[in-house]
Each structure stands twice: as structure tokens, then as C-alpha cells.
Length: 112
Image 1: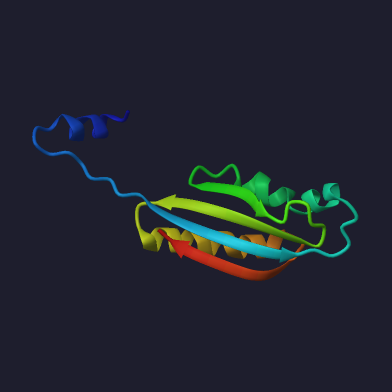
Image 2: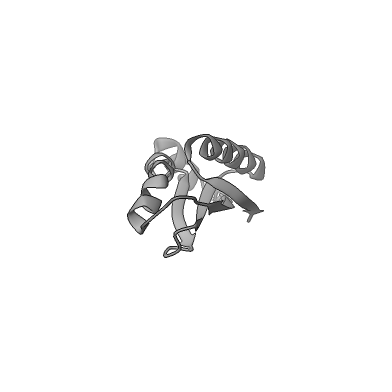
């Protein structure tokens, strides 16, 4: 626990209110030329390796795991404000478009 948080918690009568915000970005991809699941997973190596290590993001393949021609991936982002999350998801979406070798068919966003 940081010293600043410890001081906040020790103040009598005032408990800090921390309201985390969550953003969910779901991407539906179309794949071409994947002959097996190993080739499909290789196409998304960057997605998991790069953004899966970010402390404010969670990345998972959420549907179409056994399909060879499509994939659905979901990225959840945590932040202190809706604006921060929207900016972060914009940044992630743009980077995914540049790095992942698959056409994006549909994008769904939700801020919780």
C-alpha cells in the first residue's frame, strides 16, 4: 500500500471513494488461409503478447475458438474515467488494426 493511500485511509471520518470504470472492446475478425487452429492462433500472437501484458488491459478470445475462418476477441480496460478508457480503447483498436493480419468485420464497445 502506498504512503499516500495509507494517509487517506487513516484520516478519521473520510473514506476515499474510488470508482473504477470498465470499458469492453469486442472485435470480430475474418481470417483467410488458415488451415488449422495453430495457424489461426499464430495470426493473433501479437494481440495476446503485446496487449495481454498491459496492466490496465485484459485480453481473451471469447468466441469462435474452433472456427478457422473467424475469431472474436475481447479487450477489457480499467481506468479512472470514461474518457480515459475511451482514449485507451481507441489507441488499442488502432494498434490492433495495424498489427493483426486479419480483417475486422465488426467492432462493439461498451463503457460500464
